[in-house]
Amino acid sequence: MKTFHNPHHALHQGREEMFRGRMVHCHEVPARLDYVLAELQRRSQGGLFLPEVGDTDLDAAIARVHDPRYTQFLAGAWDEWVAMDPANAQRDALPSVWPLGNKHAFRTDVLPQNFAARLGLFSFDSGSPLMAGTWTAARAGAACAVAAAREVHGGARAAFALTRPPGHHAGPDFFGGYCFLNNGAIAAQALRDLGHAKVAVLDIDYHHGNGTQTIFYERADVMTVSIHGDPATEYPFFLGHANERGAGAGEGFNLNIPLPRGTGFAAWCAALDTAIEAVEDFGADALVVPMGMDTFKGDPISGFTLESSDYDTVGRLLAAASLPTVFTFEGGYAVDEVGVNAVNLLEAYCR
Ligand code: SP5
Ligand code: ZN
Image 1 (cartoon, helix red, strand yellow):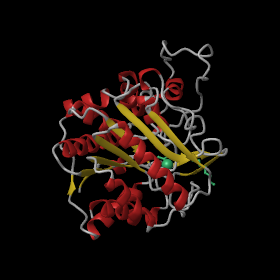
Image 2: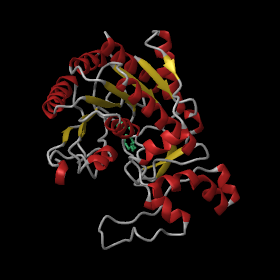
Image 3: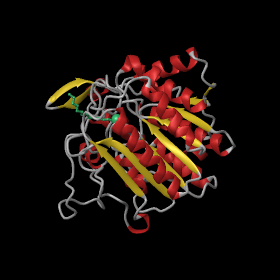
């Protein structure tokens, strides 16, 4: 399986995130990707490639998923942040004010002039710092997703978009959960645009893929399935319940399988069987797997207890679905083990 990796990922390197009223070191660090890359090399798993996607094609692929008002904001956000105060060049940008969810409590038709207000309008948490290289890194990551989709469309069994910042929490017009551009959604939409009629997204990150769900919620041509920590207690809290089944034309094409904190591999695996069955019943002709490795027992911010060897089984079960598959790299914060776990999954998929 070819891996398309992001040469600019380390330009996105947050210092601190807000956590329970304190600033703590960022969990989403460049070393995460470096460990996966090193392990792929050590085990000679497929080849490593840089994405070759022209600027025009790339911007078009991003625009198929994200609102131009949002991407324009992201592209210029750092310059605006520094223009507010030259001392900001030494600090990451973090939002501190948000509109409420009640539609009578805020306006979205008038874009505030104030930068801090727009930073809040286009985000949902204060754990996702934005810095000088965020846009360049995120955009180059989207190129990995497009390259992987093209590879699979060209006949490859699977391809891996190895990039960070991750993507599955990013919605049409919002960032959060360390995510800015939704790489999995961009891959899924690219597969649709290349001619695949029905694309399924099967999200196995510990956290609910709220961005991806939002993007495709009213669509019948892209099914979204997510196995994750129950939002009653787990981030991102406000979405991911079992009774969210899609809306309008998309009714019946979203499936959430929330599991309690502490869930082990037997129950998680039963959920994966259910998820794969749903993808098969849907009749998908291509699959995208946002591959979060934060289901691992050693993950510092998550609550499932998968072991390194369990990822072999996950890879084998996904391969049994026999669908052209794009993997995108999402969460996974037990940095020392993230490489071994990710490559266990991918290697087993290829066997
Ligand atoms: C891509 C991805 O995995 N994003 C996750 C973002 C999670 N950010 C908030 C984490 C809050 C977790 N609470 C942890 C309690 C640990 N003691
Ligand atoms: Zn996660």
